[in-house]
Length: 163
Image (cartoon, rainbow, N blue to C red; front, side, top):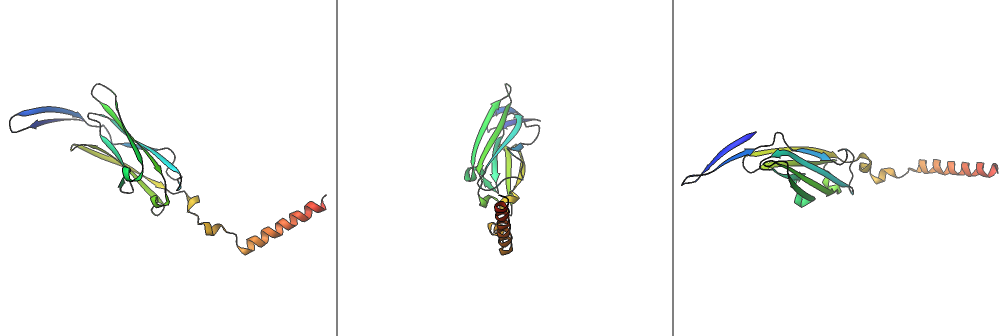
């Protein structure tokens, strides 16, 4: 979409600007599927916007907090023609247990062209079910320990008898 704007001052018309807005909203991609992350792992995401003039500023918001507070963000703007530029932002986030609220981590990518365009996309990242199992539930019960001990004794008995 092309947007024409005439900027006036008290004296006269200063600029007649033509802006090419992105044809669609930003697109976010994770390095892996969104249901397989655990605290301690590194999450990598990319958010990009279609070519436009000017390129939108893209930024990540993690559980409502700007990327600078939570992870490392890197922005790139690449010319694709004489007038259009493509914009992308890359997120690297070392996951902590506090990132997952009730097993979810919300990552939002927002695209903004100052005062004339704004769009966003988001992904809910699920905490890996394996990590959610409490350590206490992995301890064997006394009956399991007794059963395991009995099996070990039986195996030892048969290994000595078979020799």
